[in-house]
Amino acid sequence: MTKNKYIVKSLTPWMMDELKTFSSLVNFDLILLRNPEEFYKENLNQLELNDVKIYIEPFAYNFLLKKLVIILKFFFSNLFKFDFGYNTIIGIKSMFWFFRMNLNLFSKESNIHAQFATQPALVSLLIKKYYLNQPLFSFTFHAYDIYFNNKWFEVLVKNCYWAFSISNYNIEYVNNKFIKSDKFILSRLGVFRDTIHKENRNDSDYFTLGLMSWFWEKKGIGYLLEAFRVLKVNGFENIKLKLAGDGPLKNKFTSFIEENDLSSNIELIGKIKGQEKDEFYNSLDVFVLPSIELKNDQDGIPVVLMEAIAYSLPIISTNVSGIPEICINDYNGKLIEERNAQKIADSILEIYNNKENLIEYSKNSYTMSKKYDIEINSKIKISNLNWR
Image (cartoon, rainbow, N blue to C red; front, side, top):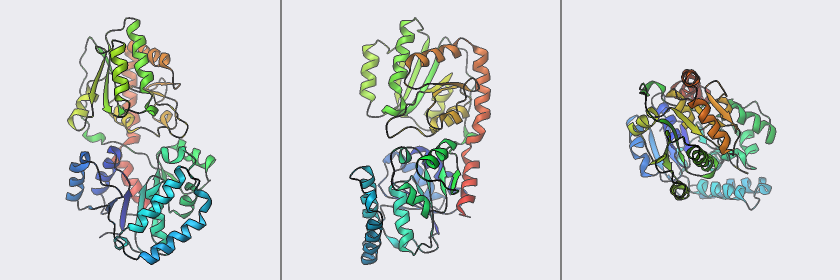
């Protein structure tokens, strides 16, 4: 058992990429607060082959009295953070998971890193309190965990070793909204640039755009579909869209496509991974992600944009959160205002009608992608974590 601990509630594809990179560089234990989906089984097996010990829901009713004392102190010292909303859910679940946690997995020498400034970070903080504040504790914050009124964020920052941010925008945001601190470190996510197989795109009668995402509101996919309705009405039948992914809005999007006779223009290809992703990106001329800002949520810097530029794709995206750090208008694509289907259509046509810009944007995307090399960024993060 190593002193290095990585705590997460639910896995994501980008998180698996960081875990795989970490596993090739350093020893650590992975602690999953929830049972992972079958989708991640192959990747978890690879982590185990790299000597990562994985503990799934490692609950044990040990040290109950001392745990209860820690929980009561935590509750009463943070009483006003329990606001009968999402902050209450975070607090109660964190105390519950801590109460059930097998604390034999930790010690005073532990160096704990948590993903997201919610339950994983609070559980880590409670473990630190249990061991008399001696373990090192850090966390990474992303998007949904800071764009609502997260009353736990300040106490997490005050008690952590480092707080990692995926974008400069987020650092400025939390400095202004929650707490100013010199503990914030920029730690970009990334992709495996060296393993990406880029093909020369053949000349085609079709100009193909693509989007890969979870189908929910903040991705702005409805505005993209409306943009394609506008393009079709204006006779641009040779401009196509491939939609990869799944999610709660899939049926709504399918109905829109059928009702507006867009089936020949828009292809739904479902969830993809591995070679399918490689083939998907290599089939595109442009990647588009029209993210929007919601009341309590928005994108950070979507990993799909990092993947797209690593494939040398021009991108069309919106001026939301940290996206302007990866999509620079008229450098590697088009950065447009959110919630505007006409602007999406206009941007598509600007690139479609200017092949010289398409080539230049493509080159610049690949240059930009050097900032989002997961192997380089992971080495820096591990060094900052003092996990060596």
